Length: 396
Image 1 (cartoon, rainbow, N blue to C red):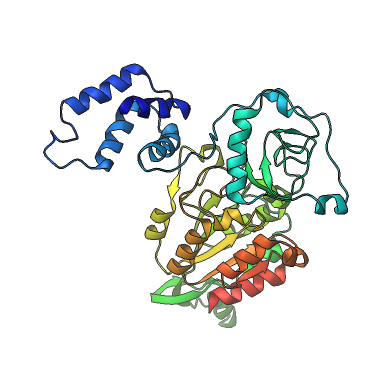
Image 2 (cartoon, rainbow, N blue to C red):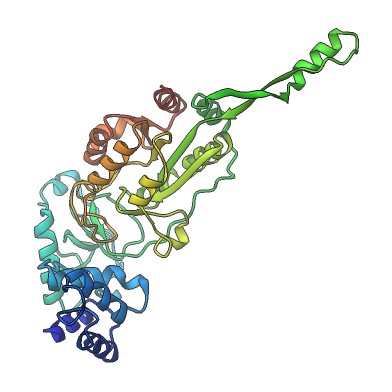
């Protein structure tokens, strides 16, 4: 039985050796888990034992989880997302440009059909294709490849988005942290953010009121008249979640201005990054986003309801990324992004979404409409008025 499990892991591109496999068998024979162990054997026990003995690096945990589920839980491996695709298949010779009429004639596949068809292409394709409508290639209308057009496909080997229609992206992309020292153009943003700050006077009169002291001393012909005031505390706590990479690259300058102003104006600020939609983990450093993950559940538990939640993102993606398990363009998420958005907005009742996309295009983006519904239409444009309206809402 377990020899098939071993080959399943190997087919998933996990570097599992025969020696490690024999170590797993030895552990089972010694009763570490199983009928010979003190407790009744559970699938979870075997999962942790096999992962400990077979996986040498935590970066392979996701691959292992998918392969384990495929073998023991009946989850079908629709397509091997780690499969190497020959670069020759993706060499850019031309970029397909179609008229709106030609684009309208191209039919798009549903999610299940798309993933099943990709699996078949892996099995069938043996050479490079260009300008076609079926195989993995370039410059055509196939759902799979680069520098062509399809209303709903999987982008493979293309430097950046051209039509914003891909439901998955077959590349490991590197994102850059937003610059929090950006000062140009932040003055008006700071003014808008100040609407959110609530200063509560608390404690004893233990803080020198310098301006009032100078004024009263001058009025008394130089006779020192010291004035005290209650200490001021900035009570505002903000949890800032920012979309990074992909279509957000068009908005880097404006988001950096917002980020810089926010760090300056708000004393209690916590921030994390996500890509397109929030899923089961986020990160704080884009260079280490796969090695230093923060579970979304942990973030929800760490901060209390006093925190005001602000999303910053263009909400521009395939609706599958929001509504479909496995819909993330980067990995197979077990739960839909919509589930995580609802959990976050439930945990932090005071929330708003700031969108850098021009408000005039919102009605033409299906994904923006979906996100608007999920955040109870608390979406505001990244303009001074939009920020003022959002801060006014959060201050209530």
